[in-house]
Structures are given as C-alpha cells and as structure tokens.
Length: 472
Ligand SMILES: *Cc1c(COP(=O)(O)O)cnc(C)c1O
Figure 1 (cartoon, rainbow, N blue to C red):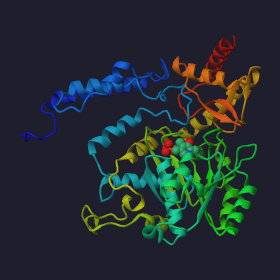
Figure 2 (cartoon, rainbow, N blue to C red; figure 1 turned 180 degrees about the vertical axis):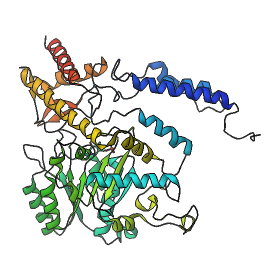
Figure 3 (cartoon, rainbow, N blue to C red; figure 1 turned 120 degrees about the vertical axis):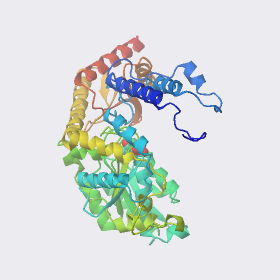
Figure 4 (cartoon, rainbow, N blue to C red; figure 1 turned 45 degrees about the vertical axis):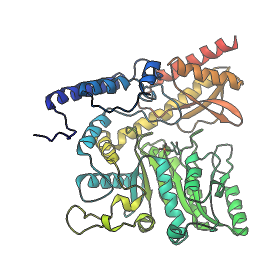
C-alpha cells in the first residue's frame, strides 16, 4: 500500500487512460499543424482562469488532462507552415516521444554516472562533428544560444585574466570585445552579466551586405589598445536576425589570431546551415572559432528549448566552471563517478534531460534530411524575393542570401506595421517587423520544415490585398 502522502495516482488504470487520451490529443494537434489559423490569441475566459489563486486541494487526473489539452491550440503559432516571425523553429512530433521518456526518467543531468549523461555526451560529440570542431573540444547542452553565449564568453574572460577573475572579479581589467551592429542582443547581455558592462562591447558597423566591416574592426582594436584597454574577444555572427547575414568568418578568424582575440561565433540558427549544401560554403571559417553557440530548436526544429555551446579549449572551459563543494565530490566508482560532470562546464547544477530530444531527433531524421530542409527554406526565400520583384508596390529592402526576406508595401511605416498586425490577427500568416536602413520592414524568416512554395504566393497575395485595402 502506498503511504497517504505519496503523490502517485490512487487509480493507475484511470491515470493510464487519461494519459493516453492526452497523448492522442497532442499528436492530433501536431498532425493538424497545417490547418486553421496561424496564431490564436488566448480567449478571455482562459486568461481569467489563469489568474485563479493557488490550489490547496487535489484535483482528479481527468480534470488535469482536460486543463492541459485545452491549452494545446494556444501556442505561438510556430508549428504552422505560415509562421515566419522572428526566428522560431517549427518543432516536430518526435519530440513528444522523447519528452515522455525524459519525464518518466526524471533524470538530473548536473552530473554523476547514469544513462542520461552518456546520451548528453554523445549529443555534444555529434554537435562537435557537425560543426567541424576538433576531437577533445568540450561542450554543454543549454536552453538556448543566450545561455551558450554567457558560458562561452565567461571562458574567454577568465582565460584572458588567468582565471583570477573567478575570485577577484574583473575590476579595472579594461576588457573590451567586438561584434557587428547587426549582432543579437544576447551578446551585450552576456557582457552585462559577466561584469564587463555592455559598453565594453564595441558595435562595429556593417557593409552594404550587412556583414561586419573588418577594416573598422581592425582600427577599433588598435585604438582601444592605444587607449590602454585590453581587447579580448571578437564575436562573429553566422546568420543575423535582421537579414540572415553571415560575417566573413575566415577573415575574422585571421584577425582574431593576429590580435590575440578569442573568436566566438553566434550561430544561433545559421550555424546549423552547415548541414545544407547551399549554406555550408558561406560558413567557412566557423570551424576555426574558439567557441560556438547555436540552437537545435531553431533551424533543426527540435522542440523548445534546446541549444548548445562548443569550446575548443576544453581545459580552459573546465577551469572556468569547475569547483565543487564537499557534498558534490566525485568518486572513482558508484553513482558519484564519471567526472567531469556537466556542472563542471556551466553555471547550472540541476539540469533536465534536454539532450534526449536532440538525440532522438538526430536519430530519427539524420543530418542529410535536416540539411535538405534548410536548403528548401533558402529556395523559398529566393522565390519570395522574386514574387516581390514582380509586384510594383513591393520593395525588397535587403539582399536575400539565406532564409530571411525584408520588404515593404510602399514606403509608409505605419501601413506596413498595420499589414503585419492584420496578417497576425486574421490568423493568415505571422511575419514580424524590423527596421532596415531606417525603414520599417515586413520581415519573413523561413525556418520552417512545413512551409511550401504555395505559402509564399499566399503570403504575397494577402500582403497586397491588405495593403491595397489600406491605401484605398
Ligand atoms: C535566437 C538568436 C539568439 C538567441 O538564442 P536563444 O536560443 O533564443 O537564446 C542569438 N543570436 C541569434 C542570431 C539568434 O537568432
């Protein structure tokens, strides 16, 4: 007999039935991902049901199953083939299977010697192989690129300060780093969180192709050095959020080597383009990085959240984070064996089994198919650009090199903003907006394995129809 305070179901049979029903509902939701609206706002009655006080009594599992399945239609919309906002992956049904097992195992991946740790190690090694990093590099599965960036830049910071910064901080070290004006905000946040201050991140202007202007980079490094500061890192972008630009990573690697800078690459979505025959040549030089942060949840479609950081100098990575108190001491044998542990490579102790859904995803699809899906998205971006070219009211605002298309209907910012809002609110499509050379752009990001060419034509037809309506 279970004791009275156990949280296990009192009726396992009923639990089985409720859980199976919920699984069917979840799979049906994914099966019908192409149908219906893209984004559906949460209805008011559900919003108010989500402000109820904390429950102090139990509820039946069938009631919980109902509450859970009622939420299914109200995601971001990124499972739909016409979700083009920001950079969101579209997920896949296989992730449901992996998450079932992860929940049932309830493994804590801070460390120790158990099955889940071996899966994470294999995933990190697969990531290393995928990205062309040398054997012996280290890595960590993270919730995303923001966390991966913090981990990587802490290694860069501590290595430059001979790891004294771990106990003494960075007071007065004058560390400065460089990235392009088009870089993601997570880099400045990492500088902030690492005590360097976001001002210590120099934003280098870009050329007309939105890539970092490397002559300005060199000049800034020299000027900072002359001013008594310590340039320590340069961060290249492999796939910028605004337009999908990829910096000249080989040239940045050369400058980093000449100037003794840590070379980090933010490859959040673009780095996984290495699996695509179309994108791979543009990423040349990425394999020379000292560290690389990227996501599995964007262009590889592992269900949220799943990112990774790789570090070439595994000894420096370990020295940056390892420091275990007596209650976490490792052992030669038993469950406390298996050093080093993930906690020795990052800030978190208790960690979930993110690696499992990545592992299952790579096993299920293989790298070739994932790469073809990326190539297809780039083709769709070019198709969209050609449809824009054909229409006199539509203006392409940035070159299309990858999977992102920025355009406008005429020149009115207010009208373009309204077009995007109406597309979203009518549930037709979800592009987002950005600013390109001072003008508001309708921004279409295609990291979506469900998108078809017909979705491009549909989008253009709707933009024109709404735009013409607003102009009248
Ligand atoms: C999404 C993105 C990030 C942040 O990654 P998260 O996984 O959301 O933390 C950083 N850089 C670029 C270029 C991105 O697209």
